[in-house]
Every structure is written in structure tokens, then in C-alpha cells.
Image (tube, rainbow, N blue to C red):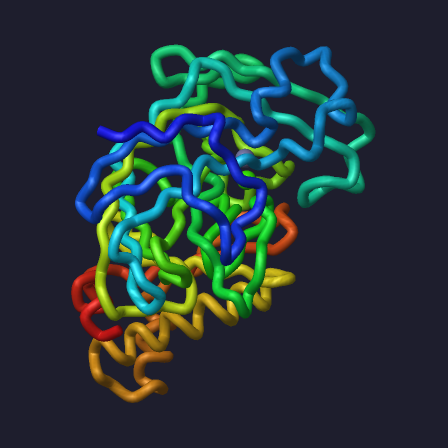
Length: 301
Ligand code: CA
Ligand code: ZN
């Protein structure tokens, strides 16, 4: 199995970024990811404003997938996410949903033992997820810093991007150029205070290609749902995009009129908040598989 080491990182998803490794469809690979601070925080006594902000949100890669061409889908199955035994969470004035109420920066370093973190006596069973994962953007979208989510993926901070889930990305550039980082041992929907429990990790992925199919925004498939993950300058914009795509997917999959698909979406689709703290906000529109199976959705593209 190929291992992509954690010292090969990018801070920008660019249309023309250079690959550090090449793999074939069907390969299972291991990717070492850094935490969003590039492990610069090791103690609660550190001053958050004194770390190197140029090294925030490193994403390991990019990984070139042989045969991937613009107009294909990259399929990324998350086999496992093994997090290290220490995680960092923090607050900073003017960051997060309640940034105006934060009076001082605070760092919390939590030990993770037997898949549990403990915070002020509260036991937290971990649910590891990937914060940043994406491919090279289109020329039209241009370079995107790794702290921001967009159509190529990026900092989607979506709790459903976890072991057992499968992601689908639009391939915009030859080789797709996958990169990932910013795993969280645990995070609530919204990522309210601006961090999850930030941890380095070893992520095992199975990579595949679906030829000649395209989507506007990334999808994540879980046991129950196929979700459209969309971002916007505010939640309204993100909701509009995710909902538009979900209704179109239902319409095309079931071959029904748009208005009927809109009604069916209203009866069955769950809108979920992914995060409200990154430069753009992210939501997902979750289509239950009993309404439209992922296979059927992909076939209709
Ligand atoms: Ca993040
Ligand atoms: Zn993070």
C-alpha cells in the first residue's frame, strides 16, 4: 500500500498544482494528515497568536489518479481514520459563531484514550472525520486556500466525512489531484467555536474513478443518505445551492417533473448544517437512499 507522508502538504488547491504521488483506480492508500495547526500547539500555555499562521490547514498531497480526466467523478471511500492520542481545541476572540462574546483566547489539549476524550469530566466517545479533502479546482474557480470550502471540496468540515462514507468529487484537472488534512477526533455539526478536536491522523482511502459523469458540488454517501455538500457566503446561499442540486438529482433519477421533485424533496430531504465558521458556510442536503439510491443517482448524471 502506498503511503503519502505528512510532510508533503499544500495550503492551496490550485488548478495547476504538482502531484507528489501517483496511484491507479482501485488502489488503497494511506495518507498521513496533520492537524490544522500543523502540530504547532502542544501545550495549553502557548499563545495562539504566536504560532505561524502561514502553516494553518495543511492538506497532504496532491495525489495524481491515473486516467482521471475533467468530466469524470473521483470516488473516495474512507476505509479508516486512525487519530493520534492528543487533540487540540481552541477559542479566539472574534472567531466562531459567538466570536463577539469571547473575552480571551484559550487552548485545550485533550488526551484520547480507548477512543474517548474527556473534557471537564464529560466523556466524549470520538467520531473521527476529515475536515479538509478535495481535488484541483477548475480554472474558472481558480486557486482556493485550504481553509475554504467550494465546489472542489476543501474545508467542508462535514461530520459525515468519516470512516465508512464515500465521497464523490467532480474531476476538474487531469489526475484529479486529491489532497486532505485537518481531521477532527470529534466535532458537532456547525463547528460552533471554530475548531473541532484537531488531530493528526492516518487515513486509509480506496480510490476509484467513474468515467464521464459530472456533478456541480461534492457528494458524500453514508449508509442512509446521499448528501450534496454546498457552500456559500452565508447559510442562505449554501442552502439554495445544496437544495437545487438535490432536487435536480431527484428529478433526473426518478424522471419526474421538477415541481414533483421539489415536493418530494420537501417531504424527505434533510438539510443539515456542516459548518458556520470557515470563510464560506457549508450545508448538506441529505437525500434518503430509499427515495433515490446512490447507484440510481449516479446513473442519472
Ligand atoms: Ca476545518
Ligand atoms: Zn479542523
